[in-house]
Image (cartoon, rainbow, N blue to C red; front, side):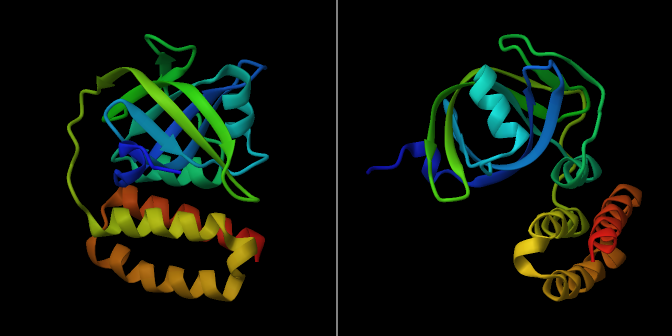
Length: 193
């Protein structure tokens, strides 16, 4: 099977909002292959995100510098300020740097644990805050949240050791938001080990 250009694009960490049959908006951290006309992502089977995508077939995919929002979306159930999307029945996170509204074109099994979702971009927008650029602490907190989200598969000893390694980057380069994000991850792991 050949791959589309979007499947060869870089995997960008995003926050995806989807709406369920109950009308509740879910925020989920999600790695997305970021193409111009199509996005591809792989939600875990059994997640609210996948259920919502099967139900409504629409989503809004956000780029954000707010690492605390990303971490909370990976490990919790945040409620950021949102407004209705322009072209899909979804929600745009007010503080996002930019976003793409998408309509699902395909949901297919990809592995025993994940499904592959292809989505066509139907609208996009930019927020009022330009991206800040690269920050090692921000990337460390993102990686820490990904490790924490896989705690049951990776094991507590491995995750805690990696968090300790990543903490050094946070200690050296973080601002208040990055410190809060790493603290959130550490609390999440401590409550589950």
